[in-house]
Image (cartoon, rainbow, N blue to C red; front, side, top):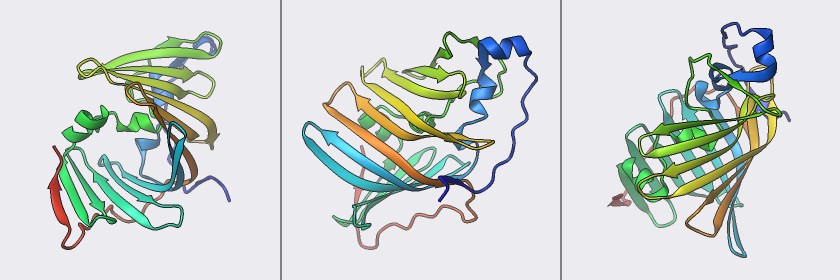
Length: 240
């Protein structure tokens, strides 16, 4: 079964001189391959949370709409859903099906707890989030280049593979909390329009813990809108 299914629309790019293509890559060329340019559905992802000698295995599903809305389902290896999470540009809701609790609040909670804002979420799956319409050429050395940017209190350092035109690594530093997330992307799969890292590793400078994600199946066509149904009679808890 193919890893990538569905259809996509070819992005029009500005003309870049041949000699520039050989030695560099443009912001626009990298952004054109972003996963969040269109709706997508990560149908199945294996998630391993590793802390010391302990390893917890889970399954995940992520649906994304261009309205910057994410619906995430976390299940155990038997397929029983433990949590369903809705993230929009300004809010988060979590159905904890195991403990019958509904967590809700502002997406500021993500920043306080994990050092991640909604604007940075695409970086977690390997998207390049600056210069989408900028055809600025960045010089490459041995097929690699590095691009740095700042979003709020976050300093983001991208490592780019110029041949793939994809992010292969990123560090997210928070100047206020001093939290640092290090993310590595491997095993890229591509078609004529998209290139996706099947393996993602996330580490934090604060804990001896890492998250390994293996994306097994993804599609780019979703006919239905994303819906989230709060659990009936769940205890409501405000995220602070």
